[in-house]
Structures are given as C-alpha cells and as structure tokens.
Length: 488
Ligand code: ZN
Ligand code: MN
Image (cartoon, rainbow, N blue to C red; front, side):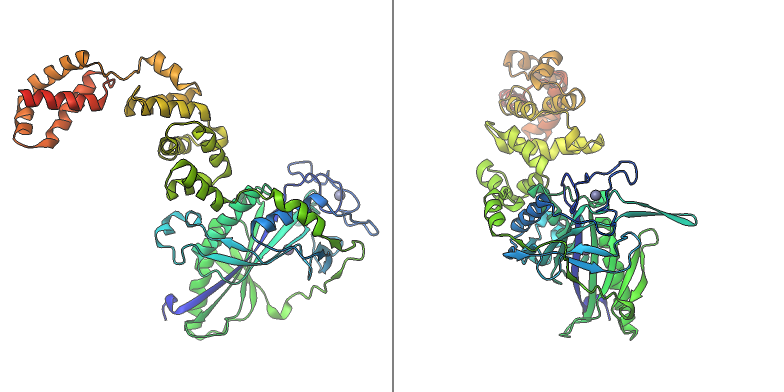
C-alpha cells in the first residue's frame, strides 16, 4: 500500500550543550579547541575515588530552559548512575538523571516559519505543539577519533554539561521534526543557555520512529536512529526510514525494535543492534551526590524568564504595526530581532525598516556570504536611510544605491548621498525641460496615450528618469508628463 496508508509516529531525543564556564561535576573549563586532554582533572578523567560536585549554573540554565518550554521542576531532583561499558567513559557509568529529572512536561510549539521553506505553504497542523516528556541534565562523554589501527581519546569534552530533552511520540512527519528542532533551537537561544547549533555539534538528535497501518491502535515496532548531527540529516533519515519500513511492511516483513545508523553519504540507514542485545542500564542513585531541593531556585529563576520567540513576534506586530510574516522572519533570530528593534527605535515608519531588512539587507548579506554579526550597516544608519527614502529626499533607486555603498563601506547614508550628489530632484523647472524634450521626441507614444493606452506613459517616465541621471522624483515626473500630455 502507498506510504499515505501508514501512520507515522516520531519521538525525538535531543542532547544539547550548555554554555557554562566549567564542566558539570568539576571545575575544569568547558571549552573547545584546546590541546587534547588539557582540560582535565581526576573527576572528569573518571579516576577511582574522585568526587563530583554539582555545577549550579548548569542546573539553573536547565530550569530556565524548562520554564521557557512550560515544564515543571519537581521539588526534589537527584542524579543517578547509568551503567554500561562505554569506550569513551572510563568510569563505565554516566552521571545522569533517572526518575527525578530537573524538568517534566512542557511543549515545543511548531512555529509556521520553523518548517522547511518548501513545506511552509502546506503545514498539516498549523499552530500545533509537541509534548515534552522531560529534560534531564547529565555529563557528556570524551571524544574518540578512530585512526588506522588505533583510537585516540580527548577528554576535554568529558564531563561538560549536557541537557537531554525527550519529546512525546507526537511528531508525524520529517517536516514536523525539522520544525521541532528549529523551534527548540530558537527557544534555547532566546533563553541564552545554548547556541544549540547542530552543524557545530552543540545539538545532537536521536529519532524514534514507527509505522502502523491506518486504523491500527497499537504502535508499530520502534526503530531508533542514533546520533544525527544536522537538521537535513534528520529530515532525510526520516524520509528514508518511512519508505523502508512501509516497503517492508507491504512485503509482510515484521519490524522488530532495533537501533539503526544513518549513513549521510549513502543516504540510508543500516541496523546496529536489535532489542535482544539492548542495554540494561541498571540505574541507581549516585551515592556521591545528595538530592537537591529546587523550590528556592525555581522561585528565583521564574521572574528572569525572557520573552519567548512567539511572544516577541506578537509584540512586534502590536508595537511596530508590521505583518505576521515579517514579524516571524525578524524574530526567527534573536540577533536579527535586536537589530530591527534598534533600527525601529524612534523611526517614523517601522514598517519600512522591516521591509529594508527583509527585502534588501538580508539578501545582500547572504549574497556576500556574510552573517548578521558581520553586517557593516549600523542600525542607526538603516533608520536614517529609511527616513531619507520615506521623506522623498532620495528615490527608491537611489536608496538601493546608498544601501549598496553602506554595505561596502559601513558609512552613514547622509555622507554617501552628499558625496555622490544623489539628492532626488523635484524641481519642476529642471524637470519641465526634460519632459518637453522627451515628449517632442516621442510623438507616437503621446498619440497612443491620448488614444487611451495609459501604460505607454511608463516608457516616457523611464526616459525622463534616465535623462535626469536617476535623480528625478518619479511621482513628480508622472504628474508633469500627465499634465503636459493633457495640454498638448
Ligand atoms: Zn575535570
Ligand atoms: Mn543522554
């Protein structure tokens, strides 16, 4: 049967690095790019007898992230040992949280603009939110690099704080999974707890996916896809897995609970292990770490929760009179939202500022291969440019030229206008002469316009603009032409 005859059920487990100064259970710096094994101590090397100490900052960041997502923090939380043989973890247990994690419940809203571009017009469940089961806080493992014949291990990453966010199995397509990750990333960046950049390895994702025929109550066998490290890999892997499982179910091949690996180059998943050799982690409370009462911390953090992306979007619409779509684009990135607000501050028409950013600035930056952080156009300069254009000092074409120069030089628009002599000309004496010349040279066009072909006037307008070297005010030119033709 066609793929549409199967219901797809997806749950995501996301590991996300926190932006703390030090590691989760020791004072070693949580940094990247240092000499291998330079940032280590007996605790994060897993030496026998070394005692872990909780990182309060990481706990506060996780509670804050939970509040952004509508989670509850239990009054008592604790850490547990998750036991397994793991080559990157000499203790052979990971300090994690089992039954009393830092956050329970909550949701990840699927914002419309968080979907992949090619999917935004056909969102199946607009405004939907995916339930979160829990967020717990644990330590990352070391990093192993496999060379020919041997493996080297760098413990700089071992023991850095890692948030694990587990969703309910409520995602129904690859595109919803992308929207979930995009929206989650936005919210964590807004919270200031992580940069959550999958391409930089700051966020990693496991996908649980099962198919069942439409009409069947019980979920199909759960297939886990391990350690996907880009948003596009998540999307492609889910598409592949839906096709693969549907095809096997069609052929009567029973699915068994298993873990699979995604090969990004070959674009396919292959089996790693099945349920028969699933781990039994034998969780037990870590005897080195006392349980933690959270009430006082929760009360302190609650008033510090920043505005969330959808709240900022609604405020932009309300305060600046811009449309939903524009507000969505501007709030999709916290830095961009801040830039817009700074430029719109005290502007007569914030709407034109939004237009300049969305229609011109972002495209120009992208074409130059620059990020917003490398944007040479100061927010105040953009406000000034919009004011010059809105006030009729320069026309649309001139404004684009000025923006181009601002992007190249970072200079103020006023200076560029003066230097290039770009002021728009509305002086009718100067324009009358050009209009007269153009009309005299284009008797055919004038006849057409008189016969009722209104569009023919555009060609004449173009000639006047050209003869004025682009400086004429197009509106004034239109009026002068119409008046002169009516009189002729
Ligand atoms: Zn350490
Ligand atoms: Mn984990």
